[in-house]
Length: 240
Ligand code: 9D3
Image (tube, rainbow, N blue to C red; front, side):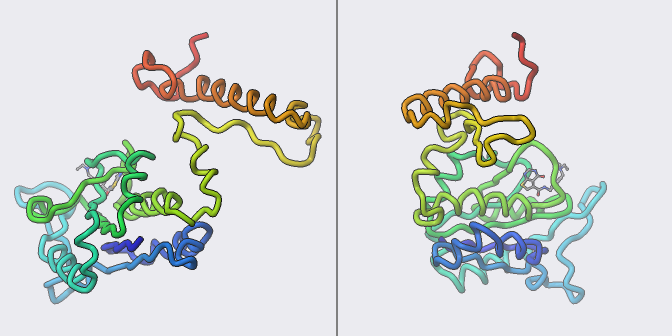
């Protein structure tokens, strides 16, 4: 997958892209990320990309010209972008979940546009065919962290990235429940021992225990995932 990111803070991405799964995915040739500095496309002698909102009010708005120029240039240099999806990170967007990430992981190209300040001039939304994506209902300082969340969630779904495709298939949320508890050595840590069933060697019993624990944990911590009557309430206190 090729991902182009247009941002005012390309260096924010470097640490994240150069560790762990994202680093390995790039080394394996499964992921290529190109970072583009929006400021380089400013039409202003002082490289300004924002200005005060018409009608007054607090904060600054990102001007349309640099955004249109950046998209035009980046798409001109990498025509395959036209085959993929173009996303704008925005608190008003479709909220990312595993289903959405699965959908995005089918693409060969993604373009991510990150905002700052009070957002983009409305003509960016009108004139460019961009899908708005949010990563949840809380306010971030900009789209960069959200873009990194999208890149991470999508990359680990690409074939050949995790090596063990089975670990994706049996993962949390995929089947609408949380993970079962995991233990490793030592057997006894400060008096807390590993459940006997895990040492029994009885794989049928172990599978049953894990299934049960996963359900119990989900019911306690995220009842909204198992119970339609909880009205989507998250982290609510157990009523029993
Ligand atoms: C809803 C707040 N807006 C009211 C005027 C202002 C605003 C606040 C924060 C506009 C943009 C931002 C920066 N956030 C993002 O760019 C962002 C984001 C987020 O804040 N939460 C969850 N997902 C995302 S994706 C991009």
